[in-house]
Figure 1: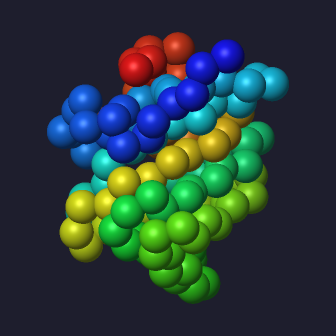
Figure 2: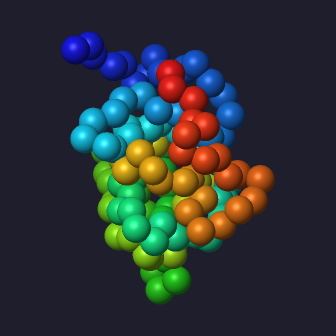
Length: 121
């Protein structure tokens, strides 16, 4: 058992939209990522996904609404729901989702990282 300092982990990288695994439990990954700009519309057919804002602000765009998140706020995107994260400025995010979750869900593009290829920091 060891503690994890999320601020220290986030300081180890600069790239955006590239989640890093910082913990694992019960078949779930705890990840941190830096967001800036717009991501892509996608869905995860079989996985729920939690977005927790550590610093900054972000929007989770859905086809029928936008959920704005600030520091200390989270939103759970249910499986099968199409969504697009957007961060107008740099935003630090903690993600909690099944270890099998592909970052771009049903889409394949330049952002895609297979779950087994995620860096652990």
